[in-house]
Amino acid sequence: MRRTLKALALAGALLPLGFAPQASNPGLASITERALRAHVAFLASDELAGRAPGSRGGRIAAHYIASEFIRAGLRPALADSTYFQPVPLQGVRTDSFNLVFETREHRDEARYLQDAVVWAGNGQPHLRLATELVFVGYGIQAPEYNWDDYKDRDVKGKVVLILVGDPPTPPDRPNLFQGHALTYYGRWTYKLEEAARKGAAGALLIHTELGAGYGWDVVQSSWSGERFFPAGTSQSRLALEGWISYGFAQQILSSAGLSLDELYVRAARRDFRPASTGLTVRASLDSRLRHFNTANVIAWLPGHGTHAGEAVVVTAHYDHLGIGMPVDGDSIYNGAYDNASGVSVLLELARALARSDPQPDRSVLFIATAAEEAGLLGARYYVQHPVVPLDSTVADFNIDGASLWGETHDMVALGAERSTLGAVVHDRGAQQGIQVLPDRATDKGYFFRSDMFPFALAGVPAIQVEHGSAFRNAGTAGDRLADIARLHYHKPSDEYRPGLSFAGAAQLARFLFLTTLDVANAAAPPHWLAGGQPAGASFR
Image 1 (tube, rainbow, N blue to C red):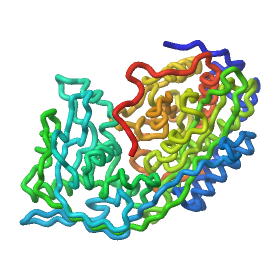
Image 2: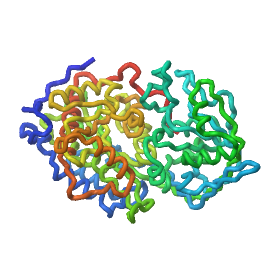
Image 3: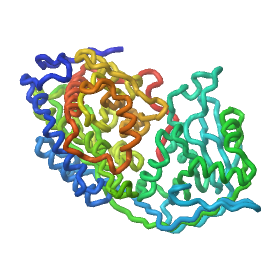
Image 4: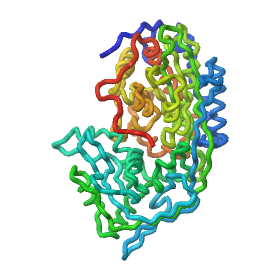
């Protein structure tokens, strides 16, 4: 059901998003490409060295964001008049690695990075493990689908071998696991959580690009450096966690007289039962540990109406991967698109809303989240320690990537089908001649991979609005977006260059200005649609 929204007094607000900023609202008129460019140029500079959690560059980024909130005139959101919410983390970096799979006749030793990327999930400095390897199919226990890959098999103390993704949808059951769309059960995070709940000593994920949503090179770059976990959770985690390549999985199973292709077929059935592989896993890992605080950077714009005690939240993560495996001689993972661009939109949106006339009815909370790349850790911490009670938090707009290649005729709204936030963005898009599209790759599970997901799990309607693929200056750019993902996602080449266009980032900032005001000024808050709130997920 579409809600009646308070009128927004913006002359000419129904023009396409390529319009010149309107003088009728000083907030909207304040959004400029020049300011967006300046934020990205600084946050993605080599001097910040990739903004890893717990790094000097990460701390500089946090202070830069806080200083911009101050310049915008926003208030500190924390009780002690600070913009920083400490997020305690544990860092684990693998120093030495030995991973062997044995039968009586064969011994296969994994090569680090080429065959496997693993870490001590429970944060122990010296891991020594020798136990049975058990294949558990997709590693899913989902009562609503009458699916249980563990059945009555006791895997306590064992290492489980798991397929990534959801089971394939058979023709006679097209809605099994929501068909083509990936559910949270298909995400690697869920599979590690479930294995830990079953008491397994470790879990190894078999990588495929189709199941993971990215290539093995992304596993190498994203998981080979320091791993981060919430402090104090080591007892609820697996001792051994990690990925093995598809080819290496084939090799070790073949050594045990098994076929990975045949196991895939068996795992696709409801009557699948965990399979003993006859392999013993021997793991030896020595790790460096550290405990530290990173921070969510939070600012508050107070509401000026009858709903001032309620808040709309806008989030964007400021961390990236820091210094990592060199690619073409470059080891700084600058993260210009992911997500300095999103932070730039957050900062200019905050400045614009602070200057808006009239001011919003509800309060607006701006959160630059920490440690998203490590598993949405900053957003997870916030929903466990909210500044505004979650039952008074009406919505989350998340920003993760703004176009650096120009304006688009379309936009994508991740999660639009889950709540009445979808009606808000579709109505605003229709008024401005912007086609608002659903998730363009539901099989990759993007909704579960960004910071709106912890808010959604906590009951807050959440959505992520991002640019589309029909670029105004270059026709369609489906191939361009594919190239961006293939060539630059989690790679050092995601960096600032003077030739980038910030027209699309300004377009997104203006769109979010209007939709945030729509929700902040609405007579009634957004609500979930039937079946929209995520289920079947929890965080370790």
